[in-house]
Amino acid sequence: MSSTATVRPRAGARAGSGTIRASAADFVVDEHIEMDAETGGEHLWLRVRKCGENTDHVAALLARAAGIRARDVGYAGRKDRHAVTTQWFSLHLPGRPDPGFEALPPSVQVLESRRRRRKLAVGGLRANRFRIVVRDFEGDRALLEARLAELGAHGAPNHFGAQRFGRDGGNLALAADWFAGRQQVRDRKLRGLLLSAARAAIFNAVLAERIADGSWCAARAGDTLMPDGRGSYFVAADIDASLAARVGAGELHPAGPLWGAGDPPATGAVGALEREVAGRFPDFVRGLVDAGLRQERRALRVMPRDFGWDWLDGGALALAFSLPAGCFATTLLDEVLDCRDAGGAG
Image: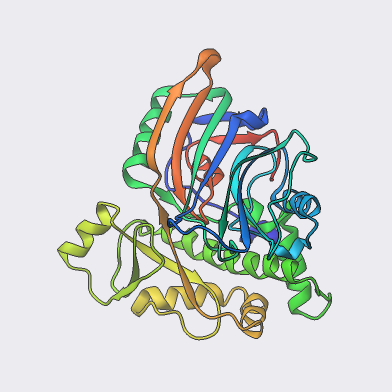
């Protein structure tokens, strides 16, 4: 299962190879959260820069420093461990003053704090800004620049990255065992990871079919179309010139299934394709439905914003871009380069 479900075909040629995360400073991620002018409240929000630390560990460190339970710490999304990342956390401190954080290790630095009325919840993330350095490049520089220009203009397939599936696809194997009753999974967080992995496997398989027929970035009759950067969608029974132009301009994206109960909203040949692909994963479909998940959608294409690159001394390549929440920088790179990850999945 893991060897086939995590395959990510590319829409174009790779231009060479290189190394990412040769050091944490080569992979920088800054979290962007929409925040209004609200002040005051029983939740302390902290903007934290971490280096070489995973999000759950930092949340535990903050909970210990504040003398609260780990479940009273919120964050909008997990960030890579082998990187320098900036993200927000919230601490529930009703009737209590702001704690000190002098005991935090040097790898964790509080940059900003403010009081808010609500907990920071998973899903509150808007986008991430990346600066990634690719070292040891070998290949065709002219082809690479042409492929990067294509990514900036037309986007890339919005695969789920390998980190969603765990080391060697282990999350998928465990999900299969759990759904089949061969394994008990009581931890709520782990259950969420396994459900996400199963959904991602079906989505990636649908996307692979759309790449194969060339429609991952073009609308077909019956497609669900999603405005860029938004989670809403509509079903396009027919594709007229106006819709085709908006898809071509990156304003709208065809969307694929995040599987759950019910039929996918796509109609015609598109809906039939999605049902056929999901039928290849009967255990995952049954497990997702039994877990109470409903049909949702995810864009088949991702458009990097404010995209640019520079060549550094020694032939290294520095790329900078923003991606919507839930999209993977490593899959964007994988579209044009065979990258060795010196840090591993974070």
